Image 1 (cartoon, rainbow, N blue to C red):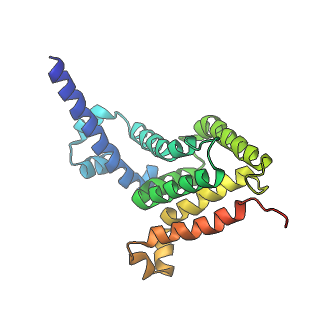
Image 2: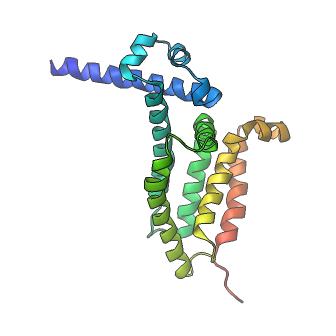
Image 3: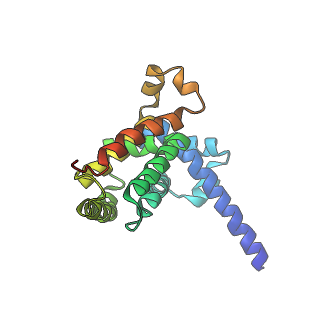
Length: 211
């Protein structure tokens, strides 16, 4: 009986993952209002009744996809170590965000679309959980600055800059490819872009010592 239950739970987990992957693609393409349960079911390769067994409403799927996206993004942000080397910690975080943009551009576009519409599904999260986390990490950056380990920059705008720069390559993918048609076909494009971003960003925040 236990084995049967475990198998059922495993299958349910797999099916939920299939639905959420399909929903991410549909929502990022058509937005919440333009997407339908039928589109998601078709993309997931299952019947509508089967999908509704896992998620009774379109809103439930949408919020879950957004929550998963935020969890993927915020985990490396939480992992910034106050006791680590500031330049290395911010380098690792920036590279991680850049990789997420390369691997899951749909997630970034979905999130951007939610924000552009006033964040109706995650407004409360932004004002509470996200704000607390950003305040915490801004405090870490302020501490590094007070210790002379970073240049005196506004920590909040530094965080916003990292988010904006790394997500640009997903949100404005069409524009980037139009401007750099040959470079973007190179398999090393994202690595090269990350190197350029890090060179500008990290040199800008390294401590400046008067000679």
